[in-house]
Image (cartoon, rainbow, N blue to C red; front, side, top):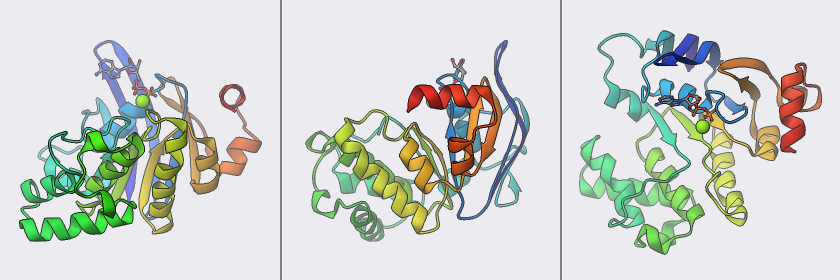
Length: 240
Ligand code: ADP
Ligand code: MG
């Protein structure tokens, strides 16, 4: 589903990613862990070309997206992304937020966009909040609207970049439950998170990154209970 081959990325003189190789199968959930500044966000952003890689190649469903002439809008339909910040339009309702890109980008009719929006709001447990504006919703509910907005585009892959990091602790669970439901439904997901419980229970594979390289990867039980590298042990020791 995703093949990242020898990915590197520099900002000016600073090399942020070095020879990163990751393959993700259809339906697989990969959780990426690592200290702040290790390049996790940059790696995710390269997968939907929010950043342009400096070197290496990335394939989505067999198609090289790093080749010249890639249709970035088409790519982002297939690869949904959820950020720490929800970035909802404050003047639109939850439903309006979920409808917008469907109409603008996918050219769906208002009726069709509304039908899909209600279906996805139902899926994230917010059908009863469809007509609320973001300011009338909790942070967790806003993030679930952002997830519904991404899902409404019928993505084949979902990327999550610290989707719960901006939330009050009591609101984290609801968002993680939605993500777990997606995983159970077979969505291919790459998830950057500090939620170790989620990583342990939901991930098929855990990747530990530091300083722009993959230090270690494996099944969650292996990485958490028997980390091979001192760097991983140190990180896990500090976080739990
Ligand atoms: P993480 O998500 O693991 O915290 P990031 O991918 O956000 O790490 O950042 C990795 C490094 O790249 C950091 O040193 C950060 O300062 C740098 N960086 C990220 N984006 C930019 C940018 N647009 N311009 C310059 N440096 C950047
Ligand atoms: Mg980050």
